[in-house]
Image (tube, rainbow, N blue to C red; front, top):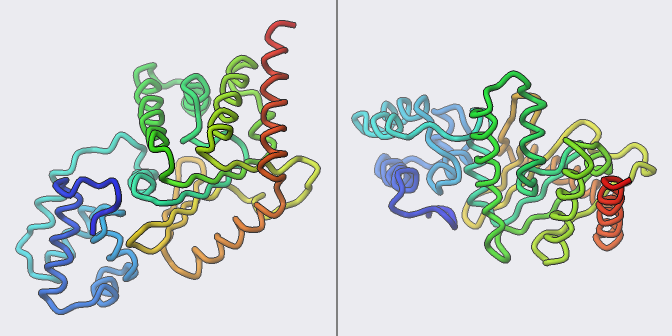
Length: 277
């Protein structure tokens, strides 16, 4: 079945449903089709459920394997270009269907929680020579993602931040005050759960980079890891389990949600005060 927010009449939902019909007509399991496509059976299930798109490359192979006469190749070719960077497209689409998102951010406030001024500074730092229109487009796409939080309870969003994400001044102290006040408002509104790993914790399980875990109603969980201009959406059960353990270790190293909120609000007030001194 399509994901929780997926319009059942959307091209991705229809393609997923058609893939399931074609696979079952061919008498193949998800694992058997996945083996021929060089992906996991879970990956096939996610395409059928609508949490992952059918890429043009996979579509051609599906048509050959299932004898669907070019149906999937034709229909995936009609998919519009995503507003997200190529390495993040599948992760963003999966995020929109997730029932729960657990994210660790070592250096910056997570994208779903960013304010416009903060997001703009992040994109400008990464692309210092980009035209302003490009920065506008990227910022708009990031703010559009944050509309996921308009629902009062779904998805569950649990974030673990390294204290560095609070202390690195992005843009200006005014930008940081606004960003952290927004974060505190979401926490006090019971919309998100947030923990902070303070500097004095020392070494912890997340020193190698960021991590996002996503779980779904009718598809296996996914893990997403990201680097500079790269990202990997992972569905191998053993790999996802290992990353889940990493996240559990991070929550154990972090301050309680109550103490984390106190630290976030204290930092926000420091930034706000510093604007006028």
